[in-house]
Image (cartoon, rainbow, N blue to C red; front, side, top):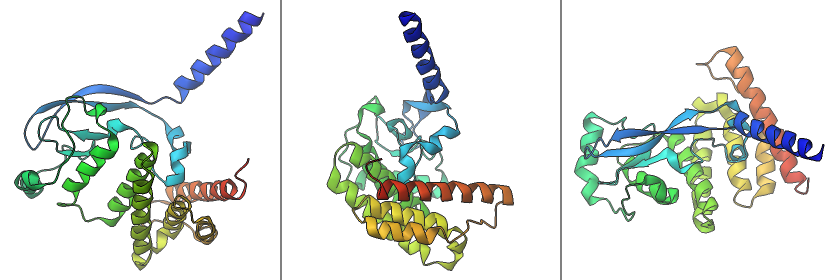
Length: 248
């Protein structure tokens, strides 16, 4: 009976692991800059459960929490998020080709890109993105991702610095009245970055303020807006409870 109980428990544990699994598969990708063929990992499968994983407290989500998500060419070291790696052409591609030899890249190239610390790949990718990327939302998220991985690698000072940059950018985005429809989301981000930089009292003010707004993207339909608003509300309450009751 005892063996049967243990076996049942193991089967349940295995089933739960499969149920909440993410999968990857190997793929060949040609570098758009130097034409080297690289072996990378591509997303196989995942589910909505990723939005409940702990990285939600930094308002970032799988796959950016994994090293697979940042590609880096084994030859020229061109690096970018997996969805951006091949998505450059025309003037942007020419700009990168012209500038690559002038960039201060300290990361060493490796055939297996997963063996390079993701913090180094992100630092390298940042050099390339700075050549052409100007979107504030992109940079706010980029620095949240950097902060997450610096902390995972126990590089605390850089994690803190990245989060303060993300906070500054989010505060800047908030000042644009165009973004009034997403104040709830932006205040969640500013509060999150304040929490992760040791400013819990200010974070709680942001969260309380956020709850007074309704997320309502004019480009989205009512169902999606309602779902997003409900998700943010739940996350805000969860966050407040986590800060106010750290022992629970």
